[in-house]
Image (tube, rainbow over all chains, first blue to last red; front, top):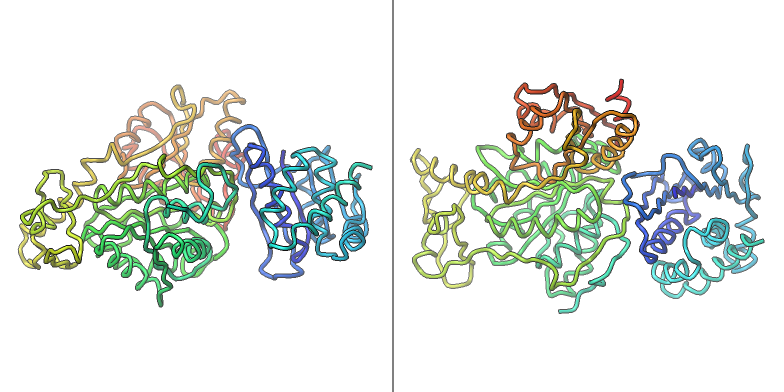
Length: 170
Length: 382
């Protein structure tokens, strides 16, 4: 499965990709993660690609995404053409105005309401993605979060992930 | 021995991180470097890990000093490594030659980015292939390895140390920005699972007096270690078997340089590594190395589905080079394609090997992106 996460710098898109990849690795799946971002630390486009497969992975980047998660209009506009025609588009409904079918929720608002921190939006979106696709197990994502987020922020990130996951089950 | 990272299990890490961990497992205990994108993460990992394994990691004033420091460390008995990218690799060329001339085991990682000069710091390229092989002046040989995955970056780093020790030579690990920064699942073995080769040491006074001789007839002299009781003279000047400068004696020069080249040439079969994919009945061959090989495998699969008998030869070593193997391939196939992320470097080696037995066509690409499988497919089917 080819998954592309797109947003702007500062939204934690790359970290979400790394955690998704780590979860797949914990499950014993083959996984590749690459990123593309502008040199600005905030405000430029930011893209994380994750390819997960039982077979060996030869691709080095997402070429035809099965799933596109867009957290910002700039990220969406940059990569929207690489989503398959029948692919799944997941958006932050407050921040992205798409021109095709989509699912989604106001992820940034959910982040603020559940943890008080808008910057946990990446974990909310990740939870929603995992609930909608089942690409990896929820428990493995939570283990990956514990391994990868800064010490002391594990619980707040898992809380945001679960809020997104619950939203995705609706 | 406790390792500062998990062993005996898989982890999800970047190519740069894999190279650092592999170096530690291979026994590297001295790292000297100067930060440069996209190789800096190797240095960051070494700075973190080395103190925890009683090793040394130093930031030097530049890349010239970095390679000089690891040459010194190697003569003091340590397994040593440095890592850099194009601009720093250029600065290291003179001392790379010194390491070849003094037969100093070391590992030099070049994480290729777009060049020349500072070029494209964050983007991948394969523009340093010829420089890795021929960048330093004078007649010489060395070993160049080229990984295509993060697992290979890990495995080939361990192999680089072992080859450096076995043949008393510098080894260049030639990777690129794409592999350096991509994350993949990598198996990090237990130390007991890792094959370790250590350099030959002199067994007696007599051997220690001939640090540039050939007492075993294999072209690889035992290496006396500084501080172990032997008096050794090490120079970049042409030297005799005892290490004394002999700069105008043609015979001494020829004997030294030919032995340095021959010690690798005669062991080609043990050094050269490659993989093939669907090559047995192929009529069209793709020859590639490094990151592009991944797209090439996919391209071969797609071509086979289209009924084109295509196959892949993926080169894991770039030097020594097996020209005969390419000639045999050229006798088998109608045409050889060489996709590479430059304007033609591996192509020239393949063309020389093919020796006119098959047409060889270059598929160049520069700018920072890897060839897509379809770009290769479309070029083959026209």
